[in-house]
Length: 364
Image 1 (tube, one colour):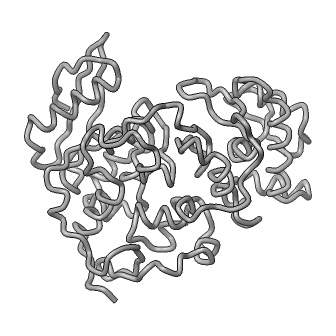
Image 2 (tube, rainbow, N blue to C red):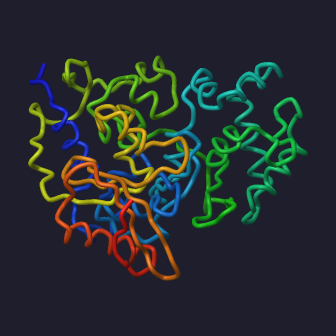
């Protein structure tokens, strides 16, 4: 076994693996963006495109595909890999499918249908319904007429009966349907030249490998929680070339060199991470943020803030305040913040990204 990894080495490794240390405009090539192997979650105004921007990627939006995939969340991927992504993010087994659809699994079981068969039927019907860009509500209403009532539930917020949310989302890309970016409510449209999910998944898109590569060193449990899959399924797909390491006395696995990285590799990195940035999605939150009160502030039940990253440490939170064309940031520091000029530079980048003018910081 290699020498034990310190907490700082783990976090520095993730900063580098996720390319958070790259300068603005480093690449315009989606193939050079590691984050797209796992997908960039597109939740909130500072979603996938901002996650890519803070990693030095200035990509043509037409090169990206938006789809509901892991955990039913919207993610951005390389458009050229649409079919492979559909195969990579489809449930591995009936047990995996049941875990991913939550309480819908019991409803399917009661109707004497497997989850995988139900997902396949939903995908077929969705494909037939969406012949042109269609708002999610209209797709749902059409599915209500086409699917057995035993597969559906009463939705109090909608005031209607419709198919469960997770099966709806997981079936969409399998049906060759993508999300039209920037639409709310979501609009579904057909992926051009769709011929179905790929027959095989490239190693780079394998979700276990990608999670371990970008959020490692990690345990089987960490990876399973990120993917919303059973631990047993993840263990069966564990990469043979992942090496065991020790992190604070815990067995974990990672890819790469024999020695852990040096934390100094991230010196000078300052980033304003969006609330759902991959760096904040690791399931070992106690390692990322040791203080329980700060964890609660960074991951509240509702209304997550963004995070101020300095080097490999989260040193505070930020929230936007917009008035007209002006953007201010409320920054709550936990410790010493980066040099003000570096922080202002990142705030200016965020304002430009939002087509606004940065108007300064506000006290929390």
